[in-house]
Length: 302
Image 1: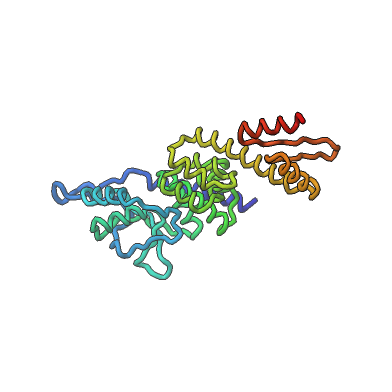
Image 2: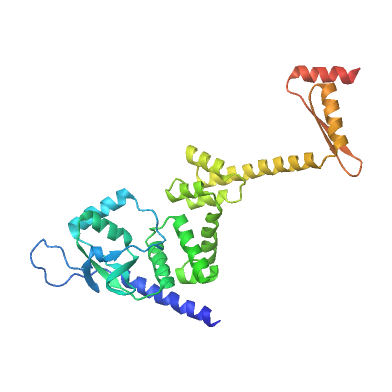
């Protein structure tokens, strides 16, 4: 119970930190000359080479075009939002990014030598939570990255889904549905990561035996989520029918299968015998042409 309460308090504290980050950056009152880039308010400004990326950053995909656009903006206006960092253990002059890696990458591309930072002394768990919250609030994570971040908090820090929802600021159902995406095959998750499939599309595929085939069809034909749901339902029915048929065939005894083959040889068409334990059953005859049907009628009329 005490641990639950601490996580609730932690969630509010993290939200407060993110709130600080989301406040508009205020420039210093005086500017050296007209046209000079404003100096943003931050804890300090440090050499960009003294900052390193966080290997546990939930964000994995950085669009080259987005980085180029941000780089151009930074070249023109400077870094107008400080990067949230934490001190590197044992080194007073180096920092690890908590949130803002895209700004850091774009600054490097723009040739910027110093960047503003906000320093927070937090542990691994808090750093990961902050990174997820910041990226989720800015819609910077794709659904798979978000799911992987949630799963890392569960695996490394023993979070439950309900706790995650409170800390991240999302409903428990959102967390659960997002985590379900990790059940998809890697190539389908890749389609979600690059935006070829939306999370809504992806959720329709989770219960399918062969989601790759339907995923490719959705992408190729540009199906909407509603169309994908309808197709997935038909797909499931078809798969269930095939499974039931295979199960039925596997349960047949040797005598029944032998009789099917004998009748097929005599009639010249596929014969299926469905025999029930009550002694009742049915025989299904499958013909491929009208000539076969005529021949069957002739034989039965003799």
